[in-house]
Image (cartoon, rainbow over all chains, first blue to last red; front, side, top):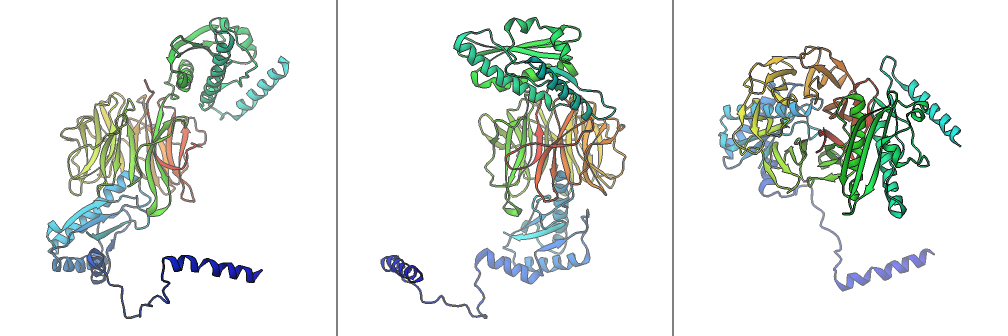
Length: 150
Length: 431
């Protein structure tokens, strides 16, 4: 039985391969030193995240006030944004998961506005910043603001 | 042959009576014999078949209410046409009925049908209401719902909520891959239709009073904003031509205005705009989040939630924004209020230690009572009768469904929908 199956398999593979494909011997294995090369917006996003220590800052429950760790992240983000005046970012606020949906939209927007104000105080031109809110409609983040390079 | 049926009926009654909550008035028992027909021959048989379908729907409509209890009907109980206008009251009295709904289906020469509907007080032996409908042959469901409404209104005095529609957000998938579409259906689940394509997050569908337009919130443009969808033409437009976050739309009872929240900067305030467009008028100015406006049925007042005092509470103001005063004073946060169609109650979501629950209070803030146990209930929406509330409940497994709870204290019941659902909006009675 086993022999028969093997035979059938061998019969099937050469068909399409000889007709259209060259089967690669081995895919080149990336060496550990070779990072995938990002380009365009993905490269900017990766650089922004790496240099700022993160794209997300967190708030306390029901709070629109930023704590010290969040301000540290925002300061690094502001420095990066000042070095890249051509880059526009969107500040996206999130509400609390336990909130009601309308109130969560407003709280998310207030968090985004608060982070935007801090970035402006740290010298980022307002033209580089826009804000929005996801309310509680994208679960997972909660009580946060993410800054998205656009 | 008759006797066993009678006994079964009585048994059914006894169990229904014992299922009643102590202290609540017993439901009015109503007989629903098969709708008959004056037609004869094949035509008559076809009309009797439609009549039987309609009869079952009327009984099913009434069975869902807390106030009316239909006797089980049998197709073998042929009901003669003359009996429609001259019922044998003694027969229904001995069957235990206090009321009777009966009628006929008649074919017309133009291919349409005439449905006649009659409601009687069996004890007093007099007619309470009658109505006739001329309908297309496929519209018998609406005629049956209208007939159920006629009986319900004759018995309770409240509008029947059977010929109504429900809009909601239909949800499939999980996490950020979740697809959300606005759907509408008849209140019994029939004629289910998706209205949006599912290419972005949508929230809070709100039907206009005539049900031909729908306001909702879309995140498709990068930020939440209120849009108006015309259900006849499928035209879809922004409510206001302003690049700002806007949400929580609600039509005025006459359909001429829409109240909603808009954020110009960090403040959420309540605005009103003509439903056809134009410049919005700002009604609230307090720092903090003012949102979730809902008109009183006469359009003179608006109830809304505000966290101006620190936490969300309910406030009532005149429709021009004057006379703002707080009406909720219990523990926890009060959110997403909706004024009942009869004006007597305000439904709300209360957030506290025990999670989110649905409750009601009177417009002056008194008479607060909680209707559900939570812990993840929200978004109450009144039935046209002001006796039932539809709401959204997220289960322990994270599934979101639509539930219905009556004001009589009975347990909430799930609504059958094709997938998960949230943000229900229950329309008034259709014309």
